[in-house]
Length: 178
Image (cartoon, rainbow, N blue to C red; front, side):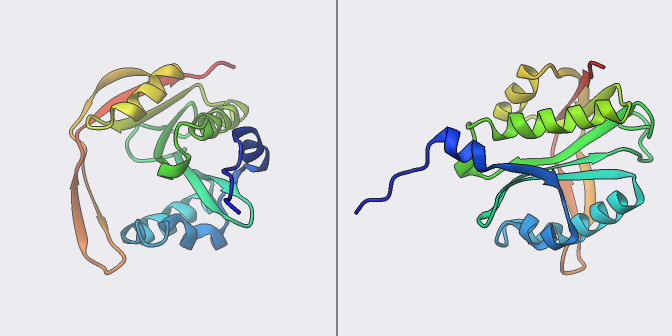
């Protein structure tokens, strides 16, 4: 007998959006696709434990994590976040099989509502200039382009090697409604 694909209402009724636990960290690697970010994920979780960041996931219980988004509440880059009224969104992704189903929108709404409750007035992000789909998602939700970012950064991968990244980006911002 052929298996039928679950309907969108059924899928969304099972979806859970919650903050990341330490046990989630391996699942953020998406079966090896993002293993090179292992140390970044561990550092983001450490920052969350200190109250300087928030990490959210979209989960289909007993199946998998299908989306994620991270928020810096405090950082050294004051144009991104100042720990009081301005937060920085990053690491936002939804698994390809679950895109265009409203999951990204639900994640974004959850994050924004949480930031408002915490007293934040602005959220900003960088979106790759080569990612027009993500840019359109943000624009549909009220984000506007405020400038460009060279997108040069580096990190230490899971093997202890420094990786240099060049991702030219649009800087976007949204004023949150209180």
